[in-house]
Image 1: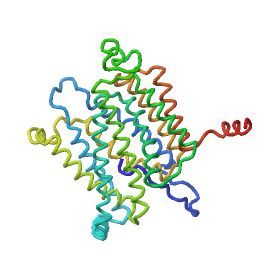
Image 2 (image 1 turned 120 degrees about the vertical axis):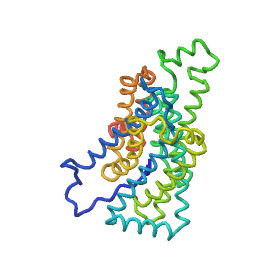
Image 3 (image 1 turned 180 degrees about the horizontal axis):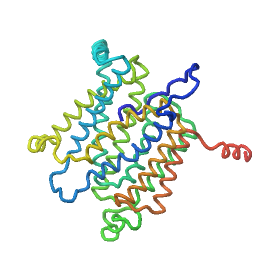
Image 4 (image 1 turned 90 degrees about the vertical axis):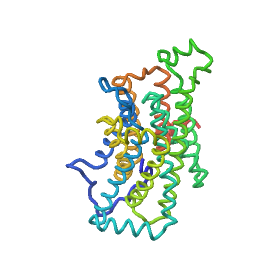
Length: 362
């Protein structure tokens, strides 16, 4: 995402009602769109990776998708700055002034830009070897990494409730990572026990894919905390900062694409293997960060938690029904419920009825 964390705007005392879009409150519009975008993200990537009948050509380059995603983010962010300051000419002047007035501040933006580029490439890699459902639930470990880095970098203090939620999340992800009885990994386990230990698939592909998700969680957490520190130390607007992130992100993604797939790009071009499916992936990923910002601006933590829960459920259902790359079992369901419960508990605390019952017993 371009901007994973953003403090919600303080409500205006003069505003008598919430902003609307076509008569619908913006908080519900942004919530529904973010839920659909998050659910579609992993599914679209998996869908685009599947071979198409009658089209035996070369597959698309994930590094090219990441590059085009950053370019779309940059373009949309620039248009939002133009809308904010009243025209394209004013936007160009504001961006040039903001970039030249403090070059040290500008250089700070290169850190999250590099991390996001690296993270997006890792996500594409992991989805070549994990189902969309397993990858989506495992990626919720970014809550754990963000919390740990917030403690180390921002000096935050987490109470017992949040630590409980984090360990609950970790346990849920561990359950999800164990293959179901009918899955390919479980069948392989019976034939080749050397790559399995305590029910976990330790084959090279699965281990590298899981490691890619874990590293992506750490890069996401570090970038989120670093960006929060950056936003608190600057007076630049959210969209202005997004333009800077998009510009550096595009440059970083270009360097990664050339270093990783330079020979293939020279041979068949940047857009080799592109189709309508890949274009959908680019547009969906590019708009994700903007939708996150909209939810945090117009909604609250409760609605954001519901969005996360609904997106994971939708991903699991569609991964099984549409892509048919995933068969859920009781272990996966329990692990997913634990991960979702941990998300709610971390953001909202334990339910009031449970807290009241504990106080009565004490």
